[in-house]
Length: 129
Image (cartoon, rainbow, N blue to C red; front, top):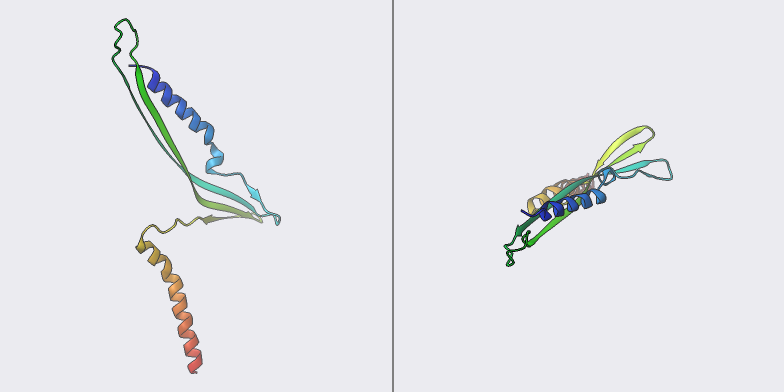
């Protein structure tokens, strides 16, 4: 088997290592004018695939067979939370994932809807008194 495929995989992995470092997961701190430090925290997902084949050479004198192959990779960085450092205390502020389904969207609307109903009932209760 040709050494081309392992070499392609090694090159791809080294390129991914160059693109992603620890600062991709825990970002550089951001200091605001009032002394609050914000540190972004992210999640990294990596997908990698590759394949190849040695083909039989039409030239019997050739030592190595022709090779065909390829490697692909994908990297996704998703914000997860922010660490808020203020006056010696640390608070985590999670980043909410967007609702993917109709049921998720309905669940997100329930608290706001209940608040509106309660305000409506309170306003009518105070008018009747």
